[in-house]
Every structure is written in C-alpha cells, then in structure tokens.
Length: 234
Image (cartoon, rainbow, N blue to C red):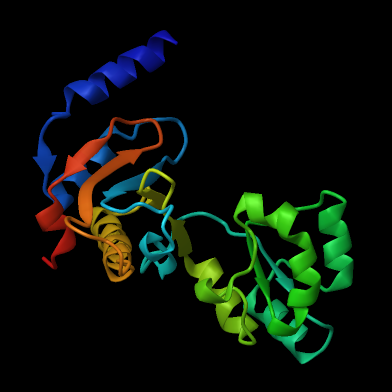
C-alpha cells in the first residue's frame, strides 16, 4: 500500500486537477502517469446535457475505434447451422450456436463479451433478455448486433467496436485504448469516440450538449479536457 500511495501522490502532483488540457497534452500526461504493473486502460467520461429518462434524450450507439481497444473480445453468435454459421466462424467468432447456445447461457455459461444474432434467431434470443440485458449483451438492431451480415459484425466487434449508452445521470464512459498505445493512436481513438457521441445527439437535447470531458487511466488521476480542442479536428 505504501508503494501505491507514493505512485498516486506522484501522479497527482504531475497534473493540475483544476486545469483544462488540450487533447494531445492530456493524452501525453495520462500515458506518462500510467505506471501500474499491467497495461492500464485509457478511459473517457463525458457529461452530457441530457436526461436519459426521456426517450427523446437517450444517447446510445456503437463506434469503431480506428486503432482498436487493445482488448481481446470474445464474440458469440446466434445463427442457424449453415452458410451464415460458417461465415461467422470464418470472421473469427468464438462461439456459434442456436438453441444449444441459449441452453448454455441459461445454465450460466457466458464466457463472451459481445453477442450477435441473425434476425431469424431473435425468437430464441428474446427469451434470454433477463439474462443478457442486465449485462449489456442483448443483441440490438440499432447497434448492428442483430444483422444478417454476421461476418461484418463479428469483424467489427473484434476490431474494436465500442458500444456506448448514457447512464441515468447523463454520463457516457468507455475504454478507448491501452497505455501501451502510441499518443497519436489514442488521440485518434478519443476523437472517434467523441465524434460518435456528437453525432448521436438526441432530438430532445437542449442547451449545451457536451458539458464536460475527462480522460484517465485505470489507476491514474482524471484530467479535464478542453472541450473545444477535443471536439474539433486538429
């Protein structure tokens, strides 16, 4: 604990928690302070001027990060045996099944991070809503996870597709890479995520939409981003 305390003190001393940093500077500082013994995740949190309790103010979607997430994603696909199942496997799916997969999930076997389904399988998948839903694993056509193009969906999930959804307080957060990534790779990923949130602005949002943005590593202090530098190309 003494070492952890010293590391955190040093990290906090290296940043100004009240300042607003340009995106490239924030990325550099967050990377330099990520000194844990594991490859820390770089995380973004955005405070939005919305009230997700209203249907016309919900922010939800998916974004393909240009440089991936640095995380190994296990993908399960609900699909009938045949060409589509072969397509999913060829694209890199870790688990492929139909009713048999549903039975495994009901028995508690859920060793996957993303779930995709063909439209004709939603009758089976729908019965798993109470199990998959709370874990954020329920396939959804709006997120591209209910689709006949299972090969493309699997490749996107493996390459670094990140789903996002605003919490009740209007905060959206996600991992946008690893501390081992290059600074430019992280800057590109952060911009891609912020751009996706900007495009997802709901019709019911009034006033300032993106209020605050912060960046941090798993074990490091959070930095406030200058919203203007983070939301414009540069």
